[in-house]
Amino acid sequence: MVWTRDRELTEILDGNVAAFERYRIPGTSVPLVGAQQMIVDTIERMERVSLGHTAVADAILDLAASRAGARRPVRVLEVAAGNGWLTANMAGRAVRRGLEVDLTATDINIDLVDSMRERFEIDGVRASVHPADVSNLSEMGDGEVHVAVMSMCLHHLPPEIITASMRELHRVSAGGMVIHDLRRSFVSLFGLPPLAMVVAPLHGQGFALHDTAVSVRRAYTPGELEGLLNEAGLGASYHVGRLPTRHPERWVTATVWPR
Ligand SMILES: C[S@@+](CC[C@H](N)C(=O)[O-])C[C@H]1O[C@@H](n2cnc3c(N)ncnc32)[C@H](O)[C@@H]1O
Image 1 (cartoon, rainbow, N blue to C red):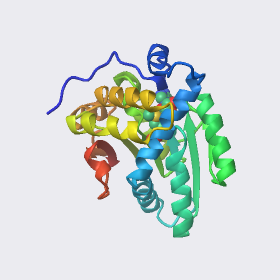
Image 2 (image 1 turned 45 degrees about the vertical axis):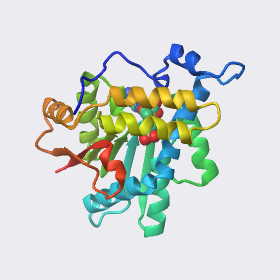
Image 3 (image 1 turned 180 degrees about the vertical axis):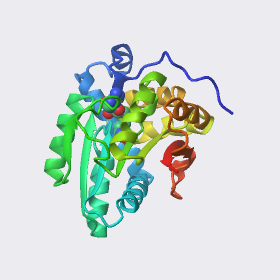
Image 4 (image 1 turned 180 degrees about the horizontal axis):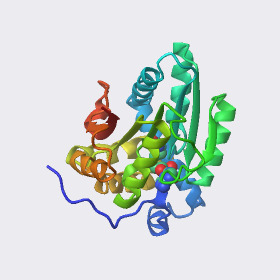
């Protein structure tokens, strides 16, 4: 059972200052960018406690390796990467497999890009980090990567930006686009915000609760995603379904995957 997507809501991650002030614990001096960092770090914690971080990374690496065939390195672009947990995990899993990879992580939020770059330097993650808007990847050539992945960002984007973004992800990966996002459903709505609150960092519970609940309410259903793919002219190249893994994350997400 689903309900209508809420187009009006915005998140603290989008710069919703009113929500940030409402959920900031009085007396704490955390800035908006600090709250945004707590929110993306909370997504990573949710993935880590459920072991989704390796399941998603492995699924993307499997696809990228099969699309690359004998070519090396296997090239993967992650857009809207947030704190970079997925790219960091793909880097680690690739080393374990002995797979030569060339990874790039981007995001539109300059503060998150800076902290992601710092994190990669500290952790020794070999990946390039750049600012980029997913709807305009004009600095990249056609087919430059084997897979272009966007995780947990689609619900931030209005439909008209989504079709432009789909075309860009499809173009730079020559058909290797993966979009992985929350599914608008009651399972997601009742399951995810409490989990976010439990794992959120100190002083970040309210921010995480707000953005997770709003994320689900503005998320797309698989049927809506199929409609958007068709509008972008890509319906024949991709299908919408569950992440190809046994991990339970597949029950609260919807995934666009090459046919
Ligand atoms: C909910 S976070 C998800 C971050 C990360 N992908 C993950 O799975 O944890 C959404 C991210 O999308 C980014 N974002 C929003 N609009 C964007 C756009 N037009 N282009 C690139 N990134 C965008 C935000 O800055 C934020 O880091």
